[in-house]
Each structure stands twice: as structure tokens, then as C-alpha cells.
Length: 234
Image (cartoon, rainbow, N blue to C red; front, side, top):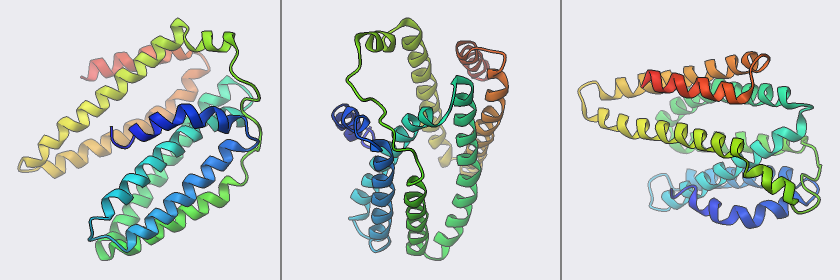
């Protein structure tokens, strides 16, 4: 709630403005990457102080901003709906693989020196800043949303899909919260780690399967299957 709240308040005002500026989304990606690099560098000098907490909070807000901007950018760099599903799947798969690798490496460095791990993290975000310069400078929305667009956003299909995603997110959040109680058990950390590994592998498998399913199924059917699997597993 704390990490999402500021962005949820600011986004309705900033989002439309950014969309009408040439390269606006690209600019947001660069700003968030630079901000995160600077925050990591500041954290490196305050790993044992109270200032660490507001710095971490700032990094979380920037992470949410980056995630939303990335989702908005993907449709502008693909040619059709089929490629959109494939692109999102590949991005999530790459994120999962390199996230696991970097987490392992940085966790190892952090065991030796927490500040050094944060400095390495800052370097990664500076690389991301440079990479963001290759993104298109297209204007996402040159004019305010038309009545037809607003009606489409509130159509039954979109509302149902949004409700389904809210349900999935809430289920994942509740499960994560529930798992924290395992930490008090004899092998709590082992079980928690096993659950985290299962989550990562499950996400990667889903990202591999999604593009294949999309060639023969509509998104609505895919979402229904996902909800059925989650309910069955539960």
C-alpha cells in the first residue's frame, strides 16, 4: 500500500501529460533508472542508519513507476496483438532468469559487503538508462481520449479481465502473507525458499506456454484457464 499509494495519486495527472510528449515514456524510463541508481548509491552510505528506510521507499516508488511505464511502452514496439503476448512473455521470462542470476550474485556480494552490492546495483541501473535511449520517441496519445476509447475501457470484457487480474494478484498477495507464518516453524526458511522457487519456475513456465496458447486461443479463454488452474491448485 505504501509503495503504490504515491504513484496511484500522481499517475492520473502525470500519465496523460507524458503520453502527449514525444519520447515521454522513454524519458520516464530514463528518469526512473537514474533515480534508482542515485538512491542505491545513497543507500550504500547509509546501510546501518534510519535514512535507509525512506531511501528504500523511494526506490520502491520508482520501481512501480518503471513497471507501469514498461507495460505502456511494449504495445508501441510490436506490430500486432499476437506479438504483444509474445513480447510480454519474453520480457517476463528474461526478467525471471536474469533476476534470479543477479539476485544470487548480489546476495553473495551483500554477504561480504552490503554497500558494494548496492553500488553494483546502481551500475546496472545506469546501464538501463543508456539502453532506454534506444526506445522510440513516438507520441503515445496526441489528443485526449475520445468517447469511444473511454467506453472501450469500461466495456464488459475489460472490466471482467481487470477483475480477474485483481483476483489473481490478491490471491498471490494473500499466499505470500500466509507464507510468512511458516518462518516461525522449524524449517520455515526452507519451506519459504521452496515456495519462492516454485513461484519463479511457475512464472517462467507460464511465460513459455502463453505465446504457444495465444496462437490457437483468445486471451479470454487463456485467462479462464489460468483462473481454473489457480482454483484447482488452491
